Amino acid sequence: MTSPSALPPELRGDPVLGPPQVRDPRASPWALVRQGGPWMGEAARLQRSVARAARLLRAARGRAHVLWYSALPEHRALVFACAQHSGQSALWGPWPAGLCTNWTQVSGSLQAHRRGLPWRGAVPSPRLARLHRRWRGWHPRGERPDLVIALHPRGTEVLRREAHAALVPTVGWGAASSASLAAAPWTYPLWGSPESLPQVYAVARLLARAAVLE
Image (cartoon, rainbow, N blue to C red; front, side):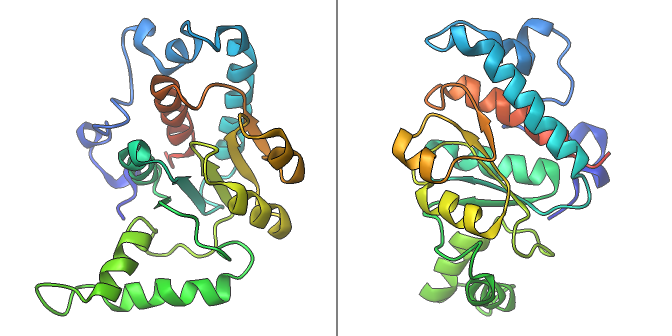
């Protein structure tokens, strides 16, 4: 995966995340965060939580392996765009059990994926195809993640339990079941509406730019 800092300026504006600089302030990510909707009353709380997560990412630049994650089909392009823009890793689909707590065993399939590239033939074997779907967004030098950013709370129960047990910080939307969050809360919760795609894209854009190595 190419580091975004090595790309020419005209290529840094990812087609999913949008251009790095927005001239019209009404179209900026913060404007989208503050737009009206069912979460308007929580806009200030969301803005503070996003700013806190962005400070964490800026402090971790170059020192932490960040994993962008979502299990939702509509977030697939966004997860990979955030990872590519920030020079980090992406994972889309069901969370692999043991990713945080049993990395030695889980990383075996990652190594098998790396050994299988480039493809030996025109069509990969079914096993290599499955490994490619799971690990294709992983940074070439990435090992166990030091920080996980989840773009939606759905399907994150195992993620949060593992990260909590392995002391891996997490950033995620706070709108999950209260019992589930009480057992394994996000380290840095984002207080907003994860069902609002414009809001999710705006927050993801801000966090991805905060993680970019300048």
